[in-house]
Structure formats: structure tokens, C-alpha cells
Amino acid sequence: MTLDMATMSPLDLVTGAFSHAGSHIARRLLEAGRRVRTLSFHPSRPHPLQTSVEALPYQFDDRDALARSLEGVSTLYNTYWVRFDRGHTSFEQAIVHSRALFTAAQRAGVERIVHLSITNPSISSPLPYFRGKALVEGALAQAGVPYSIVRPTWIFGGDHDVLVNNIAWILRYMPVFAVPGSGAYPVQPVHVEDLASICIHAARGGANPVIDAAGPETMAFDQLVTLIRDATGARALILHVPAPIMGLAARALGLLVRDVVLTPDEIAGLMAGLLVSDEPPLGEVAFSEWLHRNSGSVGRRYANELRRHFASDAVDAV
Image (tube, rainbow, N blue to C red):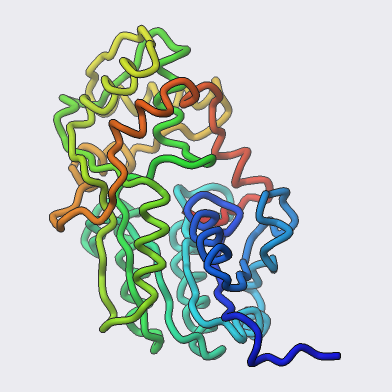
């Protein structure tokens, strides 16, 4: 007996549903009674959502297959991107792949794309991450599918948190924590659950809105590091160093932990104050309150980005 398609719940596709932001979006959709499909470079990777989500591989080299993987999808939540160039994975490749994904969505009749970008992207940016994000937004605008763009600041919280977790780990287990420059540049962290809620709300329609996803607290980076040190009871010395020295320190630590800790472009974007929004904050979870509740667990283990995402020299998502 076949199931009447009219009685089935709507189907959404979340790229990288086994990764950080994607998993929180997927979980909320499932809780709302919707069916969820994902595209992943690691569709068989063990994950708590593995039995609840239909997992298919990315097929960027087969555009017809890519379009078929999007058939029947109501909303595409796109979190696909790369954090840095590595091997065959690059920002340029990610832009091409993103364009192919949007074209496939148009061919498959997807009703709306909710695209996860970054605050303050710019085609004229000297930073490949922010420039690439702007180029992908431009490709989305030309795809012919109604869309919403969500621009998060600095995502924190959840089981796959890398940045805040690893700051806490360094403060816990290293004698010195290096802050590039004065540390006075602002950051505005947004909790991953708030981000998921903003993304799902963005799928409700509108004339192709662009929405900043930022938390309720804005603080200097130096203050954020100090808050984490005090909350965890760490005793690391916070040392301000020039950006080039910070880059060398991050590279040296990366050799120790066999990971990419922080890239020069990430340091430059941080110091330029790009991780804040001029819009009223939509996030509700205050970083300081979350940190107080999680002070005993954050940073207990190092979160290795290469091990998590580059098992096959490719990444799933933000």
C-alpha cells in the first residue's frame, strides 16, 4: 500500500544537519512535525539525528542528481560553506558549489531558500571568507527562488561549539592566552538555538528579507575572554600581542593540537569588528548568563575542527 502524498507532512532539506547550526535547525523542524532530509559529505556519520533524518550525499559533480535530491522539498535551509582553504576544498570551490545548489533548488521547484551567511559580508572585502559570503548572497539573488538570508554574528553553544569551547580550553590548560591587539573591538555572540529559531521564522516568507542574527549582549573581545577565564576558574595570563604574533601563536598551537585554531583572516575579521550587527538583536540568550550555567563543562575537551569536518577533505557546514 502506498502512502497518500497529500497526508504526508511537509519536507524540508537542511544541508549539514549533522553539523553545528544545521543540527539545531533540523531538530526544531522535526519537533514541529516536518520531515527533514539532509545533504552531507558524511551521510553515514554517527549522529543523534541519524535515524530521524534522510541523509543523502552531496553530488556537486552530477547536477541532475543534485536536483533530484531536492525534489519535493518545501524549504531549503542552506548552511553549506567552508571555514578555510584546505587541500581540494577552497572558498572558490564553495562559491561554485553554492551556485550549483541554488540552481538545483530552482530546477526542483523548492519554494524558498533560507541561506545562512555572516554579518557584514562585502564583495570588496580583502578577507576571502567575508568576500565569498557576499558573492554567494549575490548568486542566491540571481537563482530565481524566493529566499531569506540570515546573517549570524558569532555562534556559540551546543554540542559542536568550536570557538567559545576552545577559548575556554586554552584558558583552562595553557599558561597564556594571546589576544590580538588591544582586544577592544566588539563581538556580539548569538546562541545556536536562537539562530535556529531565527532561520525557521525566516522561512515564513516576505520579500527576500536579509536578517541579522545577533545576541542581546555586545562586549569587547577582551571582556569576553576575561568572562570565560573567570567563569571557568582558569588562571591563564591574558597577554595582548600584535596580530602577526597572534597568527604565529595560533599556528604553533595548531601544530600541537593538530588543528587549525585560528586563521589570519579570522583574526583580521575579529579585529575589524565584523562580528556585530547594527540591527536590533533578535537573539534572547545572553552570553554571560549561558556561560554562568555552563561554566563547569565548557572547554573541558578540545573541539578539533579538522578531525570533525575533514575526514574526507571536505566540510559539511557552518
